[in-house]
Length: 175
Image (cartoon, rainbow, N blue to C red):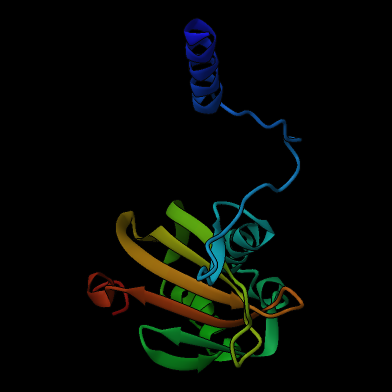
């Protein structure tokens, strides 16, 4: 009887300590979040692709097409200065008129944060990017690290944008 009880205890302990495996479909969402989580983060999405496309279009001089990705009332905070989207888009021809070519060389990091609730402006989705932007004039290139954040409305258009960078390196270029 002692051997039977000992065997039953060992079997129970092994069963209780064993690995549990669950089969899941690779395409199904199985993530769970803490009850106090306010949202989640994506390393790539349609919105991260949109941000990259807008930068490509804008820097290549196609600001009219880039403008279509913004709401009519979009606001841009360029190093803290509040601009309408149209005021902000005027910088691109200004760079060209001074012989400056601009290109995002690479994205050091880009991700999307999706909040559980929209804010007072109706924004739930924010894309954040650290970009290495090259400004070239007369064979000389200055690289500037730009932190860009954009807020998307429910229709997938950009309603707010923030750009933060050190503009001191561009002073000689803008003369």
